[in-house]
Image (cartoon, rainbow, N blue to C red; front, top):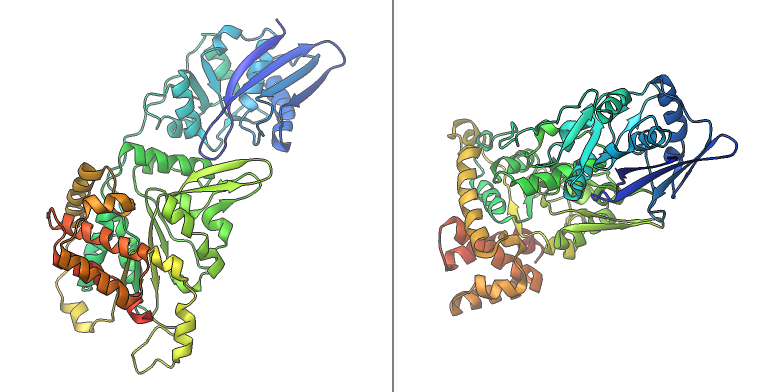
Length: 498
């Protein structure tokens, strides 16, 4: 029979739609054509495949070869279809049994020698193959990543000859075993931070409720140290969260290491980053920093130094937890449920209130105006990180370590998940009425604070969410007055602007 079918996977965002590779050998002058919206790298696969088949000692058919990548309306990119095309040609020419290809999907780039090379997006392909009930053959370099999909049957091969031997039942490929999820990272410890009790407290609250946090203070007061230690006090990732974060890293092509899967991502882009670098982009859309920080932390240091138009692109993802990138050829959705931690100086020189500061009121006002009101509204907590006396840093006792704080954070998260199935930062407005009831006096207190600080309705609800988290940390059912007043106190930038 001169027709063969092999299954493979394309990549659209973090999804891996099925691609059926159909190979037909017909009469006429020898030629090879690939149809089905292939881009340049896909068209070039015919030359890679021809050389690989010949190098491995097989016969390349001297016939008219038509390769169809279905569905035809789906754009195909990259070298990921090389292995499937090679297997289809060998099966159509009778050099491989076609029956062995029915329960298999193939993904990988071929070298001219027949060696298999890794491709990005292997993990989403393994997840999709598992749902389809088929095994997946990939290169050895991609097999550990693909095996993270629990329950998927993943075969890692180093060469086209090894895949052919497996299909002929001459020498079976071994199933790749999954790497255990890494529960604890080796990053910085919160015990390294001396003093700054209020900022440490705010960091714990932010971690407990998933709140966004802005740290404000002069240079050298520990803002970056605090931000870098947030991931160490967040609860361990669930398997679903870990797979979601790993899938984004897999499609990004940024060098995902399966040995670190399960560690919460921490991304810290430079302030010169562009809008597409933050949210993603390209003719074939790839994830940006906010998606690479999915289920982890995005740290923006020197926040006012970012271009204002770049910061504005964060507003929608902060609310929705996802980003849609639309291009003429295709549209891609990427998850972006990240926790934003940002830091800034109180004035352009950083030393506001000290003798060395020479900034005028107008300069300070313009500096803070670089952060728009709508973006500031979406940051739940604004916390001062003041300069401490040197004696407090050298003689002060070390604070609690990350493991101790993480235990309290995890207990507070458990209360939130049991109550609403989500962290407090994600509570909808309708849920706040039932989950965050206030006494009459407390409601009047919050309304008065909102009027005095000139806060929006969004800021009002975010104060409620923070108060709910503070109550959860205290093990309290209702929100008490002290929880509410502490939550209002974490709006220091609103006070300075007011």
